[in-house]
Image (cartoon, rainbow, N blue to C red; front, side, top):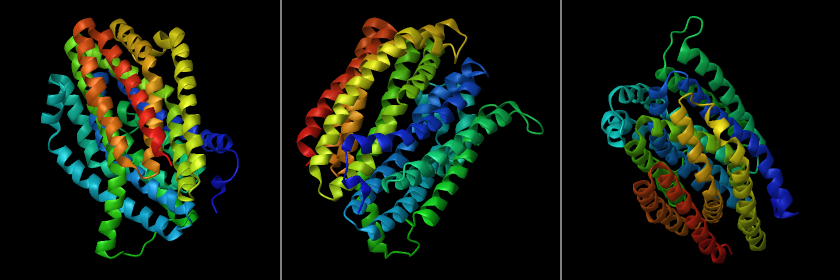
Length: 440
C-alpha cells in the first residue's frame, strides 16, 4: 500500500514539495544560465533568446502532455495496487515521447525562418535565432525526454531521484555554456550555437540517468513488446489525459509570443529583451509553485486511485489558501527588489526600466496563476481533462489576449502587462469554481 494513503495531508504535501524545490531550482538555473551567458553577447542575442522561448516551450508542451498523461495513470495505478499497469504505461509513454518529438522536431527544423519571421524576428536577430534553433531541433529528443522520465519517477512517489538528475544536468549545462559559448581551451567560441549544443548535451545526460533509474531502481520499465492494439490503446489513454496539459503548456508560449509581438510593436527590441529577462526572473519566483504542483501528482493520484476522495478535497482547500499566501508574499518581495534583479540581465537602462515595470505589474496576477495551475493539476491527475481545457481556453483567448491587446493600445507597455495580470486573476477565479465540484 502506498505510504501516501495515511497520515496528515499537509505533512505529506510538505514532504513531497521540499525535495522538488531543489529540482525546480536546478531547472531555473539551467534556463537562467543560458540567458545570462547569452546576455553577455549583447542585446540582439538576448532578444533572439526571447524569440526562441515561445517555440521551445511549445515543443516542450509535447513532453508535458506525455508526462502528465503517463503520471496520471501511473499514480492512480499504484494507489489502486495495479503495478503491472504502472510499468506498462511508463514504457509506452517513453516510446510515445520519442516518436512524437522526432516528428515535430523534423517539421520545425525546416520551418525556422518563416516561423520566427511570423513572430517578429528579422535581420540579425533572425540569423541568431536560426543559429540556435537548428541545433536545438536536431537534439530535441534529448531535450524533451527528461521531463517525461522524471515525471514517471515522481508519479511513483520518489521525489528525490529526479532532483539529483536535474541538479546534475544544471551543473553540466553551466560548464558547457561557459566553454561552448565563449570558447575556452581548445573549443572555439560558438555563440548562440554553443548555448543550444550545451542544452542538448546536458539534457541527453539527464535522459540517460532517468531511464537507468526507472529500470534498475524502481523497475518501472516493461521491455516486453506489447501487441499493437494494446500499445495504441495505451497511447490513446496517455494522449487523452495529456492533451489538456500539453494544450495549456503550448498556449502559454502562444500567449507569450502574442504579447512579445505586441511588446515589439510598442517598444522594439528593447521591450522584447525586457520581456525575456523579466519572464526569466519571474520564473525564479515560481520555483515553489512548480514544486508544489509536482507534489500534487503522486499524492492526489495515489489517494484518488485508492478512493480516498476526502483527502483529495482537502488538498484542494489547502492549495487555494496557499495560492493567496504565496502570491501576496511574492508581490511584497518584488517591490524593493525588481529593479536590482532586472540589472542582472542587462545594462541597458531602458531594458532595466521596462523589465522592472513588467515584474511589478505581472506579480499582481500571480495568485491567479497559482490557482489555475494547481486546480488544473488536480483535475488532470484524477483523469478529468475536459474542465482543464475550459480553464486554459478561457485564460488565454478569453482573458489574457484581449486584455493585453486592449491595455497595450490604451497605456503602452504598462497596460499590456496589466492586461496579462488581470487575465491571470480571472482565470484563477474560474479554475476555483470549476474544480470544486469535480474532485470527488
